Image (tube, rainbow, N blue to C red; front, side, top):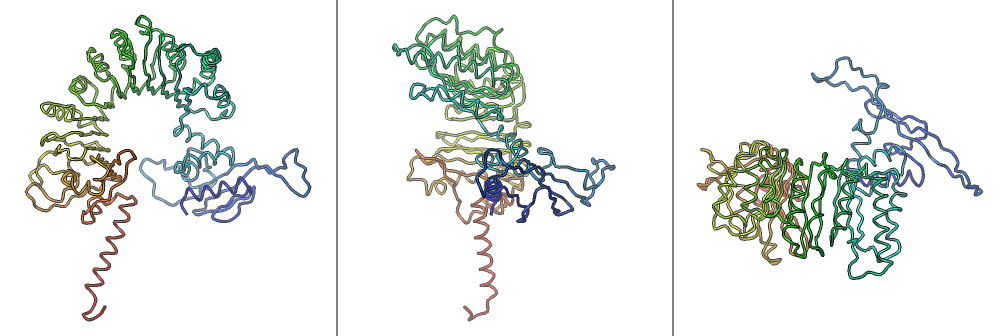
Length: 551
């Protein structure tokens, strides 16, 4: 029985039968039970009848209690940093949620989202600890695009306030309709739009101080719509740390005067992460589009993480006008790697820790040398590197530098792409990867393949086997056998994209020595492979030791 299933059953029993079990034994209220190492656990609190329930023959009880844990003495050697005056008194340590990882905090960190929600109902202490974790995993999402489809829609904000009194989630997604009257809506729809604007003002006044991440979506038809969205940002600006703008401009007016928000009104002083996903549907006047983009380029100069999904050319052009753009930037993501992307990255002064480059096919062959120099520039600080090759480069070679701090490496490619990846040469292995020297801290390796059609899925890695040699080499460039090992790797994730469906994991050919290459990678298919290899060795040993003439 796994941990999640066990805790699910424990929560159900405590809710329905008001019974607590420790190691299979019932724990009576106000009763201590000894555990290993002289640890003690107790269920403290009161059990009292519920008021207003007088059904004959049935006793209704309400449990208002909490667990108490005391850690016993453990005869272990003290580290140099520990205080020598520390004692092993079993009554000197009490369990506090969030501070003692042996009981609640550590267990709750493994629970699923739905299990955590049920665990909140057990007692006050469980509720406090579950809420602390739920705040990190949860996002409040309100989609008001279907505002007119039912009478319950305008009441969603009020319901949320009443039902989530003690759970102040810090992440919010708002998808708003255009507030401008378009195509002469009926009076009822116009009234609902006005009420939504008032409700948002009331909601953010009550919950605004808890929101640190915001994804603001919606269609913008006019200056009035834009001002409403800016008003939301102004209410949340004191606490916002992560902001994504997912606007779709479909402007009906042509004046750009009010699209440059006054700098004295918007101050995103705590903003650390910014994602620009703004699109322009109906082509607005060029001066209006530039005004909007340049205003946001000026407002987010202090961020550490930046991602641009749309309008890359226009946004990056605005950023290149700064002598030192993004002086604190540590992470950069783009959907389309072009020359202007390299121009901006070379202009950055702060070393990067994360770099995600997609659509390398937009690069001209002469720009690959610049890309190699860029990777070399940030090689000593990069911890996360991802790039996607999507076209044929006619044998183009990408030389990766030694990346001493890299922990996560992700490489994607389409079928039949011929980009070759090489590492710094050495006398013993030429330009073949040597994990201990080239990637000494690598923890996660992800490989993604996009086949040309769903019919190619079963054999895609067999056809593209030469790509595996980039990271799983079995021979050097002269053809001599070599043994590759990476003891730091914990996560290995090869996948193939099923067109129109999803990703599916890939199992390599059984002859591929993955278990010896990555002895510390444990997942479902690696465990299966280890089991099969063990059975094969046992069978071979039995055949070798069997006497002639025996079956």
